[in-house]
Amino acid sequence: MSKKNLSTIAVRGGIENDGQYNAVVPPIYLSSTYAFEGFNQKGPYDYSRCGNPSRDILANTLAELEQGEHGIVTATGTAAIHLICQLLKPEDLLVVPHDCYGGSYRLFINLAARGAFKLKVVDQTNSAELDEAFAQNPKIVWVESPSNPLLRITDIADICQRAKQCNALVAVDNTFLSPVLQQPLTLGADIVVHSTTKYINGHSDVVGGVVVTKTKELGEELAWWANCIGITGSAFDSYLTLRGVRTLVPRMKQHQENSLKLVQVLDAHPAVKQVNHPSLASHPGHELAKKQQLGFGAMLSFELKGGVDEVTQFIKALEHFSLAESLGGVESLVCHPSTMTHAAMDEAAQLKAGITQTLIRFSVGIEDGDELAADVKQALDTL
Ligand code: PLP
Image (tube, rainbow, N blue to C red):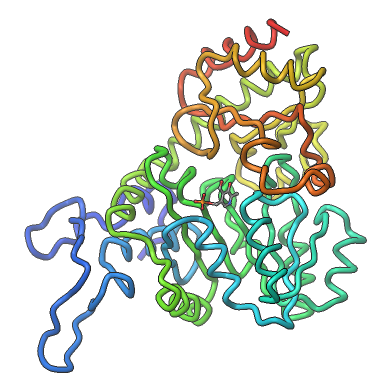
């Protein structure tokens, strides 16, 4: 079969696969259990924690979008991250970035504190820190690029090359870009993780996750663990998420177009101290993003001049942005990472990661871009 374009994969996942009534859209299989064909004769499915047809369609579609061999759909993005941790024994070292999603950071440090594995937190954009980490023969290197909320860009291909030399696996959290804008497996990574809660579902009405592996073997090992620890996603959530996936490509296009308009407004305004978005030539990861990404993405953060009072006033003045955690939905969101998404990091860890009190993050939605830009401008003008 010819190699399919991402839009075709996303739209056609599971379409016309219904053998019973020729339904174009695949039916949803809510049954928790499946009858055996006879004594000791299991059919393709037996129990929905282990396997479910609706979940499998989503898993296969996401694996194809990421160019991987195996997809495992989990109940949340955090469950997907936890699943990767099952590969680690107490003597194994996990290397993670100092500015990853706060919930990932919380999971890693608390599992490590209980002795599940050894942990090293590094600035992955700093070559010397990376050298030191690789000298300790890690088992897994965790990458999040662009990082949340600072939008730092990590050289995924370089990390993968270094990792190969010490037989380490590289797992990339690709939540911020989706497979439409970055495909880590093609850059040499072994595992891709998503919080499908975000762009993949795209409508802020499902919490879910996925793990996609480069090899079938690793996928099967992780699928075994997913069933064993009971973190597979539900049929209904899978159905909704697949519905969202069908529009992933055009949504990402609109998200990006709108974000560029906001970057322009923010970058030109005197009330703004700094804008973090890889589209800016001044961004330290600009050239790298051009090389390894298929677009600059629609997440951005910025620091206001002044203090918490200015932050409060600005957020209050915004009309088209909801003050809420999460990202990647069709609606625009504004968030204060220090007190919201990254509150699980203590003050010292936040400061080390560069998360200040005046840092604000936007998840730019797909509303009218000019209206969003005008809204941000009027809110900045109040300062
Ligand atoms: N990874 C990233 C980059 C995230 O932003 C989040 C949640 O915000 C997660 C993982 C965790 O996903 P979930 O909230 O679906 O458990």
